[in-house]
Every structure is written in C-alpha cells, then in structure tokens.
Amino acid sequence: MLFKRSEAELIRSARDGDGSAFAELLRPQYTAGFKVAYGLLHNVDEAEDAVQEAAFAAWRKLGNVREGSPLRPWFLAIVANQCRTITRSRWWSPVRTDPPEVEAATADLAAGMDLRRALARLGHDERLVLVLRYYLDMPYEEIAGGLGISPKAARTRVERALHRVRPILQVREALI
Amino acid sequence: LIEERLVFERFHEALNVQPPPGAFDRLEATLARSTVRPQRRPWLDVPLPRINQTLVAGLLLVVLMVAVIAAFLAVQRPPVHTVPIRPSNPSAAQLIPEMMVGNVGWACCPSRTNDGGLTWQDVSPPTPATRTKGGITTYFLDANHAWVTVVTGAVALQNGTKVVIFATTDGGQTWSQGDVPVNGVVSVSERLDFLDAQHGWVIVDSGPIALDKTNTTIVNQPLTRAIYTTTDGGANWSRLVSAREGDGSTLGTLALGCSMSGLTFVSAERGWLTWDCTSSNGPTSQSTTSDLAVTQDGGRSWQPVYLPASPSTFDYTCGVYPPVFTHSQGVLPVFCGGNGRPGFTGVYSTDDAGTTWSFRNAPFFTQQLDFVDANTGWAFGTTGVTLYRTTDGGRNWAVIKAFASEQNVGGFRFLDTRTGFVLTSRYAPDGMSGFTTMWKTTDGGQSWSVMSLVSNTGRFP
Image (cartoon, rainbow over all chains, first blue to last red; front, side):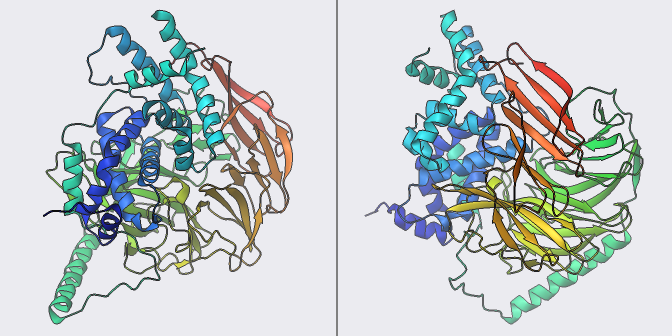
C-alpha cells in the first residue's frame, strides 16, 4: 500500500537532496508561483523560466524554512525576487504586452492590454501587491506575511498602487 | 469609484493565463535529475567522502588535464580586436552621471556627456551576435577610460559561456575586446574594478543551473565564483582564484544566492567584496554567513568579515554596500529588511583601514545612501523626498533639503562633497500624467537647480 508522505517528511527528504520530494512540496504552489511571475513579467516563457530558477533557489534555501511555517508565502517571495532580478537584468525595454492566449472580444483584449501596460509602468513592489491581491485573490493578512509587514500596511500599499492604475479601470468601466 | 469586485474581474481578465502544458512536469523532471544540495546550517556535521586510491588518481588526472588546458590557453590568447563605433546624436535623456571630470562624464551602459549632463550620447560597444542573459557591468575610471562587460554564449538556450570585456581609452570612440572564459553556464553576473588604467579585477559568478524549457539539455553544477585580473588595461585576463559552492573556501561559502553589490580595491593588495542579500533569490542565512570579504594579497585569497552587532537571526535580510575609504578611515553602508519586524539602515565606520568596525544606526530606513569619502554622505529618508547629509561618517544626520513638490526619487549620486544629481518624479492625481526632474547641486545639497524637466502625459505608451 502506498502512503502519501507528510509535508514534514517531504521537507526532510528534500533537505537531504531528494529532488522528487521537493517537487512534491512545490506541486501545490506551482500555479500560484507561475501566476505571480506572469503578473510581474507579462511573458509566459519568462514566467516559466523565473519559476524554475526560483524553485532551485528555494530548494537550496530550504534549510532556512522554520518548522511549521507555511510554504506558500515563502516560495512566492522567492519567485517575486527572481522576477525582480530578471527585470533588472533586461537588456532593453521591459514592457511586454503580449495578450494572453484566451479567446476574448477585441474590446476586452484592448482593455486587458491597457491594464498590463499600466502595471508595467509601476515599480516592482507596487506591481507585486496588486498581483497578489487582485490576481491571486490573497487576503491582506497573507500578503502581509509574505512581505514582512502588517496587514494594515499591506492594505495601504495595495490602495496606493491601485490608485495608480485606477484611471485605466475607470476608462474600461466607462466604455461598457 | 470602482467596486473592488470589478477590480478583481479586470485583473483576472487581463492576466488570465495558465502555466503552459507540461510546465510542472518539466520542472519535476529537472528537479529529480539535479544534483543541487540544499544549504545546511554549519553546526551540523557533514560527512566527508572517503578518499580512496581511485579517487586520488582521478583527481590527479583532472589536475593534469586542467594544467595542460591552462598552458594551452596561456599561449593561445585571443587577439585583441579594436572596434570603432559611431556615436549617436546627442539626446536630452535624463541620466544620472556616475563619473565626471569637468563637464565630461559617463552614465550607465554607457553614455557620455560633454556638457555637464544636459545631453548624452550612447557610446555603447557593438552588441555581439551571441549575447545572452547577464547584466551589463560598467566601470568608469576617468574621462577617457571605461570598461563594459557583456555575456555571450549559446543564444538558443540563453546560456552564457564567456564574459566579454570591452575597454576604451578614448572616451568611447573605439572599443577593444578582451575575453574571460566562464567555468559554467547560465545566470552569469559580474563586477568590475580598476585601480588605474592598467590594473583591474573582475569577479564572475556562474551557474548554478541551466534550465532548458524543451528539456533537451539539462546542466546542473554548483555555483562557481572566479576572480580574474588584468595588467594591460583589459586586453588579457588571468584567473587569480576560483571557488565552487560548498568547497569550504570563503568565496565558495559566503552570501550564496545573493547579488554582488561591489568589488572595491583600495590598493594593489587590499580589496573588498560586498553582497546585497535583499535583492537575492530569497532569504539567506544571516547567522551563518557574512556579506563582506577582504583580501590582502591582490585577490588571490579572501577572508570573511563578521561585522559586530550584525543581525544574528533569520528575521533580517541585509545588504552591504561597497566601502568608501579616506586613508585609514572608512564607512560601510548597510541596509537590513526585517521579516515581520522593522528593518533598519546604518553605517559601519573604521579608523584602522577596516580591521575593526563600529556600527551606528541611521534615523531613517532607506537603501538610498551615497558616500563620497569616509565622512561625507547623503541619504533619502523614509518620509517624502527628504535629503539627509552626514559629515562625520554617519554618526549624525541632518535634513538638508526637502523636495516638497516631488513624490519619488528615481536615483541620485554625488560626485564629490559639493556636486550632486537627483532625479525625481511627480504625478497628477489621475496617476497618469507627470514630470521627471533632474536636479543639480554645487554646494553639497543645500541649494538645487533644475537641469531638465520632462513631461510624461497622455496614455501609457
């Protein structure tokens, strides 16, 4: 009979160099990590690259994780830092506006592109809090945990960043 | 005002994308086949491998082969190519000068000004066709001498295998090329420093992994750090020291995964390496590592420097910035972000050329500090666009200027105790239209004049 290994067992195995165990640990976090990377980079290939590199960085630093701490904010923070590094090392214009591969009306695509352009104009930290809040639907408490700040400060950061993109959202509403 | 529910909907519409098919499977396969070893806390006993005769023979064979290859490379150094370039027309770009002599100066990547920063010309060396990932690093020595690094390699896989170092001695009109082979691939980053027009150093981090999305090629290797030196202005580079992650050496142990913030030689023998772990790939172990190392023999060997009163728990992630020395006095800016607790900014100072350091907390929390000598420095504090100055090595800070009309600082730099530049921005309430302003001071920051004002209006470009 096969038994599913507990998270603590997986962490122990991964710390001993078992890559399959670490992959099992990451499996529930992968989609969220990819979404954070895509929300910050706006490029599917770069997002996949970023999550892969973040995964290896996370594995190397697994010894720093405290017992019982949730893995998700820790891993998402590493993904976000990896995206920051990629953005800094970009050779030329970082603004990529490839539309996502979904079927949508032209007006919707244009509105989405406007919002992505608006996000690209923000700083890394502002973009990150908006992606965490409105794309990953994270509560302020979890955002605060990942950023190492209070929930109140997280809410303030989100509202301040939202203020920067609000004109784009309002234009969209006016068109409907 | 828009309901928050609609904001959720707009974000999901704009960013509605799922991971590509098989993305996680590729990652899982890569992880399963990799040889990455997670970091361990040093007080754990790590069993040493048993050395037998076969292993010793193998090692000797490897050493012999490396020696033969090194000898071959030493006599087959690549020829130096001189590449003339045609500078572009001057533009009124708002660039912060990194070095200036009179009205002639340099800024990132590189650009050059002949009018004190009012207009700039792009004088970049030609981009190699095989350029891959890896940031550009520059070093500006004086009005004529500058160096630029570019990483080249396998473009299709974005794997860097060589660091190309361009050098100019005529202010960017022509560039010559020197090459540094990298012992590894991917994620190459580097730092440059020159003591004079002939003697320089470069540190190159390569690895730790090569990731191929098509999963046809996977290369795993420990992080490798190597320091090279030149004595002919960058035409030829020779390796001084090389280290691999986990080999027990200083370079193979310190600040793994952190960004290099500086390589600073104060003499031909004495130099400093600094790392910034706040811009790394995640939290690092502050209790087990140092973010500062020193060499006393021109870069051949390095020793970690453990700063007093440095945070000793995992609750902080710190960045140490390059030291600035005036004779035996020096300062070392430090920034520590707190995990669930307030972070802090401070300055370490020394009176004995870095043998001992003492720490002083700054009354603000910022990463934006700049020192021009061991006493004089500036910082933008937490509240608004407020500039602080110290004239006693960080012991005391005083508000010297509040840019009341501005909202953000895009960057700043002081070239000496009197001349400095600040780039600020402000936006209208709609958050879309605004201005970026370049300011200049010639009296140490007490009064500022506007060099240029650029309007950013209309929709996002």
